[in-house]
Image (cartoon, rainbow, N blue to C red; front, side, top):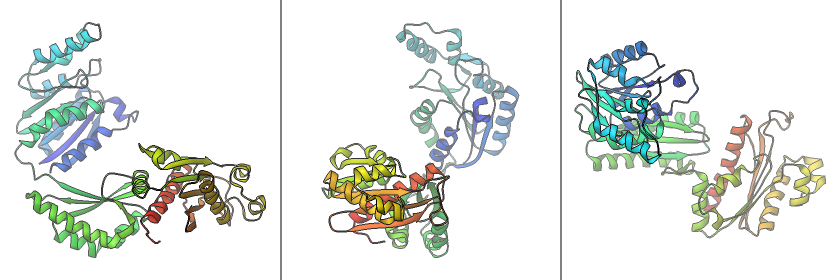
Length: 418
């Protein structure tokens, strides 16, 4: 089954909003064994909507349309659909009652604009909206499946999952559902990973009826393994065998096989080993502490975080010797180590993390260009410090430095070497 996703709305075409609906729908359809071949976006223009529906009908068996189902003057997708299907608009009493009930709860009466949301092409199946007021519709027209959804993401997702998915699963022509396994990695560039896995690994995985792909979720990379085997148990076995091939090759670069990131991974490890953490940050500006405390329950292991951005703050709060700063600079190995050691001592924590670097765009030198950073992780028995250069903009620089620091802590907790 080939699918096309059509997004309707001036705001989608002119870039006022990011079209997250299309990417979400594509992911859902792919997991169900539907091949998404086309994405289209059109403004609120009747002739253009009719044109894109006609084009889609000629090249796809499943067409999902989002947008233009509300009460305003530019919400006329359903009216255009009725013209396309050559069917009159009829009032659905159940939908109309839901609209009346919704506004009665607000102490208001539904306007004529609101009531028009209960008009549908004759013969269409109504898709209930449990989140908002505008229902959607499903219509089988000339052996092509059409489904219309609201443009509001929360409404669209709820309607797709609760109302349309049962219909789609019964549709003929759909392949077996996709089985997916994700191995989340950090610390190895995408190009290097692809180069190392391309020949031998891709061939061996292919023999197991598994497709190999990558998805960058900066600063992480997901290795994605797909299998369309009709027998779920056989698919699971093939996926696990393929995953083991990847594990043997990437080893410690794999940080998780669940949908979780380093802050949660590190937090779980600290809890399991009954350890605590404190951090001293300069160039990351508190991002590490923020990421750690984004995880519920972080108070069980996170003691404190200091943002010692200025040199004087490093001197006053972390006892960094001014002569070291003068001689070697604030961005240096000894300063990073002292910061990590002192924040650990202050907090009486098991681990101390520190970062000091040059985020840019200015402040670099020939010896220490923009993107230079020293990261230190210390505990009672060992101390680790390393110089890196991450030539990114400020935001990405901070993200990758924070992730590198947390990954180093992960490795320490698991007793991994470099």
